[in-house]
Amino acid sequence: MKKNIFLFILFCLAIQTTSFAQIILEDRIYSDKIKTVLFYPLPDTATGVPIIMFGQSIPLILEFDELGGEPSNLFYKIYHFNADGKQSYLSASQYLSEFNEYRITDKDISFKARVPYYHYKVSIPRVKVSGNFLIKVYRNYDEDDVLLTKQFIIYENIAPVTAVISRSVVPTDAFRKQQVNFQIDYSQVTVNNVYTDFKVVLRQNFKDYNAIKNLQPTFVRNETNTLDYQFYNNENAFDGGNEFRYFDMRSVLFNGIYVDHIVRANDKCDAWLLPESTRKNVAYSFYDDLNGAYYPQLYETLNGTTDPDYVLIHFKLTSPKPAPGNVYVTGRFSNWKTSPEYQMAYDSTEKCYNGAFFLKQGYYNYMYSLVTPDGKRDDIYFEGNSAYAENAYDIIVYARFQGEMYDRAVGYFSQRYRGR
Image (cartoon, rainbow, N blue to C red; front, side, top):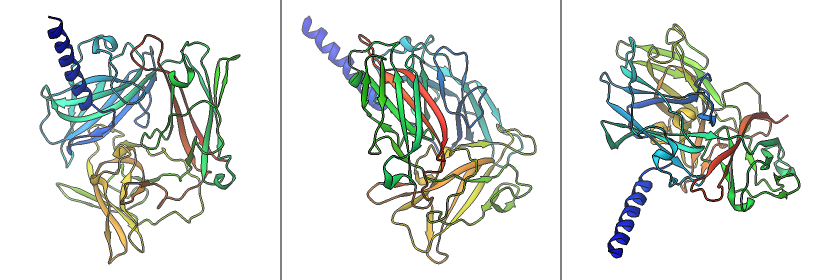
C-alpha cells in the first residue's frame, strides 16, 4: 500500500514538473495574427508597464488585436512565478479568488480599416499574493493553442527602496555608462539570511533581456536594518545608449514626423520613413522620448483601439558595408526581441538595410539592434552610447519568508534619469 502511495506521489510530481516546463515567464507572441499588445495599469496610458502595488484597486489592462474578420473564442489563465523565473508551487486557489480559466468577452471589430481586425481587452482579476505573474491567452479551451503570454508584477511596499543614479564611477566609463546604487530597508520583514532570502532585479527601460540580477549587498547594516548595494566595478551599470528613434504614423492623410511619403490603396497602405544612418559617432543630443514604448492612435478621431489601420512601414538604414551580424528593428512593440519578423535585409547595390513591417497607426519609439553570429546582442553598434542619455530605471526586490513556498515581491523603485 505504501509503495502504491509513493508511486502515486511520484506520478503527480512528474505531471506537475512537466506542466511547469511548458510555461515560461516570458513576453511572447505565438501567432502572426496577434498584433499591438499593450499591458498597463489604469489610469496610466498605453506607455505604462504592468506593475502595481498589492491591495490597490487599480486594474491592470491587457489589450491586443487579432488580424482577420472573424472573432476568436479566447480564454486566459494566470500563473505565479518565483524570482528565478520558475513557476512557484502555489496552487491557483492560493493566489486567485476564482477558478483559473477566464473567458475574454470584451472585443470589438475594427472600424473602416483596410486591414480588418478584432480588438480584445482584459481587466486582470485581483490576486491574493504578491510576486511575478504570467497571463497566457489561448483559443477554444485548448491550452496548446497559445496566442500570447505577458508578465506582470504585484509588489508589497514592505521593503522600501531608495536609489541614487549617476554616471559610472569607473573613470574610463564615466561618459558611457550609468550606474544605480541603492538601499533596501528591511526593518518590516524577517528573513533567515539576507544574502540568500533577498533577490534583486535591476532594469533599464523595463527591459528583461539585459536586466542585472544576483547582486549581493556590499554592506549589511544591522543597526538600521538596511542593505546597501554600492559597487565600484560596473556591477550595477548599464550603457547609457541614446535616445530612441521615433516616427509619427497617426494619420495617412499627411506625412507625420520622419515619414517620407505614403501610398494609399483601397485594400492596403504603405508608408516609407526617411532614410536613416548610424548614430555611433554623432554627438549626443537630448530630446524627450518614450524610452522605447509606443501607443496606437488615429489623429482624426484620437481613438487608439478600433479606428487606426494597419500600415506597412518601410525602414531604410544606410550602411556602407554589411554589419557583422543580423540587424533588427526593436522596441517595446517587438517585446524588445530580435525576432525574424522584424529583421532587416542588406542591399549591396544601394548600400543600405531595408525592412517593411506591419504596424498599427500610432507613435513609435524604436532602435536598430545587431546580433552577431555567436548570438551576442549589440544595441550600441548603430545607436551610439552616451552616459548623458535619459533612461528609466526600476528595481524589484523579492524575499522568501520562513515557511513560505514562494517569493514575494516586497519592494519597488522606479525613476527616470538623465546623466547631467
